[in-house]
Length: 158
Image (cartoon, rainbow, N blue to C red; front, side, top):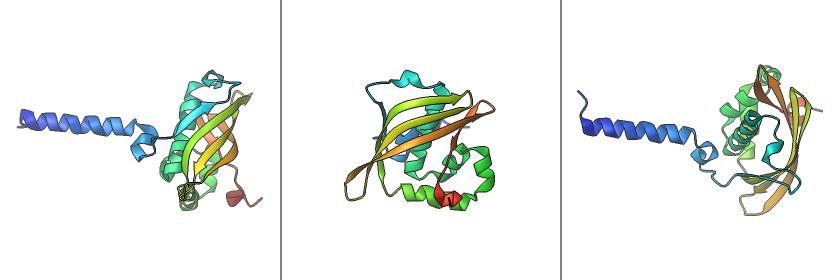
């Protein structure tokens, strides 16, 4: 029989695990990631709140090196073409920098199934230098779930 004291300890442990799993980037020690918007737009521009959530999860995973979670968020055709080991090396490379914030300039709905997100990543290197990197992030909806469309010469040799 479980004693009341032990039951409370187990309940607290489960609570900590569940909260940690839902904490997003914070669960990986990268609490400073923020999504901000240019003066011209606000968060209401997202075509779908689920897309905004997936975008946030994707970029949190990318800079914390969570390759397995990120790989599952890539478009189905990409997942079929690329070996997970190669993708893991790609994601691990991003850990060299800390993602400070992402500034969104536009969320463009090309079709009901294809959305482009334009923005700037603010990255901090190991030596403390802050750099900006422009992005055009593409997302495709398949069976009501949003997936990241990765285009990178590292994979496609173009």
